Length: 135
Image 1 (cartoon, rainbow, N blue to C red):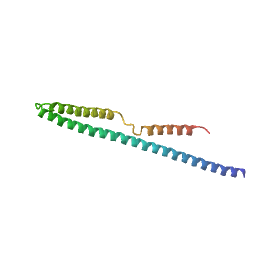
Image 2: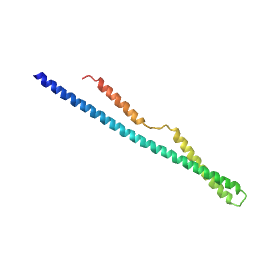
Image 3: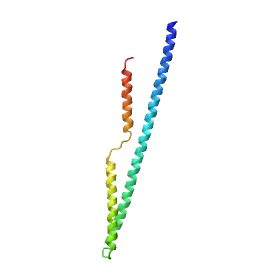
Image 4: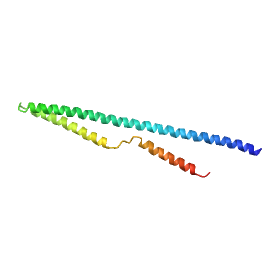
């Protein structure tokens, strides 16, 4: 009789332990999904920043080229050449600075999913240690 009561108590303990393990795995999965979403949002912002720099650089370089053409056309027409030349230099300089910034940002590796993968590795290592622990 004592054995029957102990057997049922063991089953109840096993089911409680299984429920706790499933709850823990679901919580880990939820945390990892939240981290993944955060990393995807950061990558989206990074790509939008690069895209806006590229558009700005293209616009400024185009305006700079147009201004340089006006400088050549107006080369011998009083002081207007100096004004057009200065603005052309400013637009071209600004465009080149944006291109340099864009190149530097593109050269840096993306951090997409790096935190999620490292946290997942830590979780796997922790589960392995727990599975090897003698009870």
